Image 1: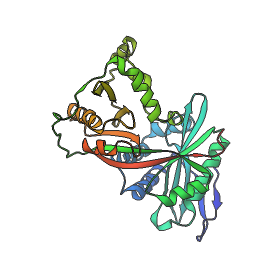
Image 2 (image 1 turned 180 degrees about the vertical axis):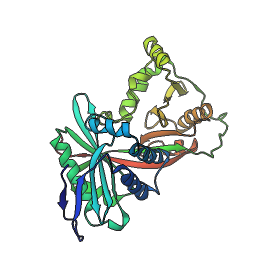
Image 3 (image 1 turned 30 degrees about the vertical axis):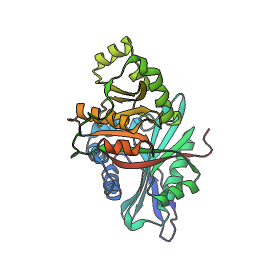
Image 4 (image 1 turned 120 degrees about the vertical axis):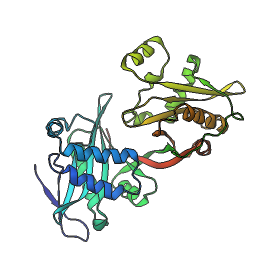
Length: 325
């Protein structure tokens, strides 16, 4: 495993080298926790805990050493080592989608004592280079919208803004208000599927489908889908709301390993009260699931989502490197 020295601005040269999955995980976990402590949600804390657990799992490390280029996990990347400790990190996560090799650069972090020295930039450039050497068709990253300095740095490196996505999380102390004055919510009928899939495709860009945790076909009505979900014990629930005879929105829920995402399909100009009614009904039915979350295009239906008892967790800007093939 080779190492290279890259001069950082206004600092002595540090050691930029590949991540060593066998020994670096605990220190990288410490760095990520330190850098993102103020914004880390339950998923982030779980991720850090998994990294620490994996560092002591011999069987995992044996498997990881052979799965670096195939598993969609942050098993490879680069670290910046200086003064005897890891002070910078950039992970590289491989994905395959419709025959294309896509890489996500993630966990770009620099210790607070070493910032503004060019470390994050050097790590990002080296990780981009590595992805392209591996035949990447696309290279992506996402960055918080409230971090303009990082957004500008990635733009300077050739990344282009492609989508803004807001993650909403249910308030743990939210009280379910009465829905008597809101439009009535029903179960999703099969006849609503064509409009539902049209909205989903409009709200969730196809170019990010490689990262999406749910295949839309899982929501499609039909006997075969029902039998499959029953066989693998998928708990799928879907709701719909109409107003004046017009479908306003459809909401789907299917629990994942560490979270319980909701998928809202609606017209951007749908009646806000109808959208609130959908989300309140889901919250009422799923009130024991404290990890309910919703990802939706930034700026759409914000008031309606907040009225249903959700808090804005973060807005991410998804950026793709120019020159993708």
